[in-house]
Length: 330
Ligand code: E4P
Ligand code: PEP
View 1: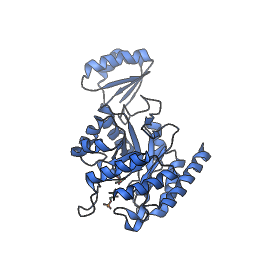
View 2: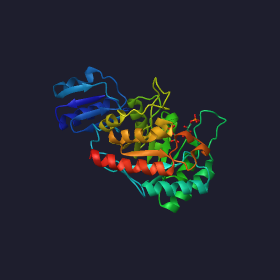
View 3: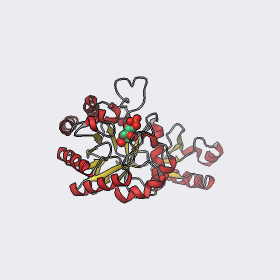
View 4: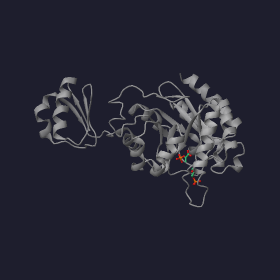
């Protein structure tokens, strides 16, 4: 809930009083606005002494106060060793879907770096629909990924599936990735809130924008505000020709609601390689501050998601077009 007051002074006074009334609920103040995290309604009696100073009580706010632009108007910019994410910067995260071998991830890393990527992606722990599908190479995959990223002087981003692996993955990665299936794994989000490391949070395939913001809030509430939100396509009534539907509208909406960088993954949205480029360009035109893209030199032999993998050459073409779209919209 947000309470808009006449001025900053009035906001500070009411916030102090509310803090005493609601000791467990965090109260945030920015200029003349008070954010009551986790509160959906308020007893009129609590406002009685201040009612002449209350301009508006907004009850339909998403409630993710720390993540909200209302309380943090400037863009969050995240700096890693080799990348700047957010604001006017654009970042390419690319690489294979899964880490197949040390040689392969290094080769794929060289290709994506040549095209402009500074972050090498790849999964060592894979969230598969079927328990019989390839589940990832685990710690061996993390080691190979780290080695490739170090050799190429790139950042590493990899998915974390389980709270029990947080410290292990933390030893290797520069950026954690929480996948669509884990967006509301609150234990995992809380654990990542305790880390001082960026987290890419992918939108759940059936999650609303408010769900995504509140998932981010779990990480922020723990003290980690290095959050990157990612639109990767949602389930809709028509996912016959694409694997998911890229919710392009979510990109400007999220950018208006939150200060975190908003990036997009058109590989998982498209599900088929021929649509990865146009959908990615649409996301960039809508304001995405980065793209995550899957590549493979022999897509038909990929361990996971070969159908949506771009070849290195196709990725280079996509990256060139992204730069042109960015110039056009600037
Ligand atoms: C890869 O990135 C995911 O693990 C993959 O999309 C899971 O989907 P599947 O197991 O249904 O192939
Ligand atoms: C991935 O990027 O490897 C992945 C599993 O993506 P998503 O969570 O979007 O399905």
